[in-house]
Image (cartoon, rainbow, N blue to C red; front, side, top):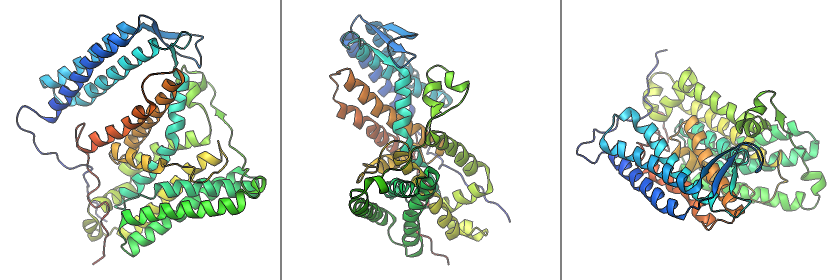
Length: 426
């Protein structure tokens, strides 16, 4: 069978005039860098800002005077913006964008850490990294579920319901059997059940995919809430006391400074989430299955002409997405908590935002999920040291970044061309 090359992104229109996208981003970074150097530098104290390589104030640390650090990193961010504004080659855009953002963040942290009360003017990097991955974990699974669906042309707004049903099924069947692996399999099936309903109504009956996704989320909330009250609340010992996966330490790697304790002393869900990112990325861009999936998501009519079974590919990938999201839901109830009503708390919608911010790519979704997780962890840290910055302000930053990304400020963002469009075989 012949194959068909499918571009992953559309060709961006040629920009004319002085104010190209790169220069607009450069102007923004220049302004933010100067703001950081001036404002954060003036607010920072002369105390040392300590970034410890351990979980507390003891041990080795990276130290810098708070005022000096805030001004220095602000200037670095401004310099990156100035370089973009001057019109450097496009191949430098991503690097300079990263330097500009990192400079602004580090300037902000130098101010906050140095201004903390005595004894609290340090940031434990191990805890920050560990907390970032912990908070990002359900987002990683949810965003990967979105990638599998939307690369096939099916909008997956039901990620919230898939995560919730996975969490409930894992807790219920893990408790009944007393076997954590049975709970994990049940969680995968629970997520796949929501995906099956999505596939049938969206693919077979051509129901609006956004509408059916919202309905399935409400269905999952209703079903799990009803069964929680009837079973788990009445006999928590029997129905809501699932065994938990413990931490698995990886020899040698666990001793790497900062990253070792955070990444290589985790549970199965951390390792599985990172492994799935790698596997799905390779499969999507390096295998025949990936080529067919992308062709169905971009141009299903052409794919059908070349012999690809469009509807079968969509059914299979939507069900697989449910399995992935269901396992993500189990990361709550088989590793951390007992099940409670609506315990996912909107993480499915945040995962959808991470999917968009990550440009429908497994690795992009991972980085976006980590960005959201870092913002949450940073808000927690600043609250612990009594920062004057409202935690609600920090919580909204990832969403603001998503809006800017979708608006095209940091690069062209385009969903698969056939995403959300039902296919009727001629």
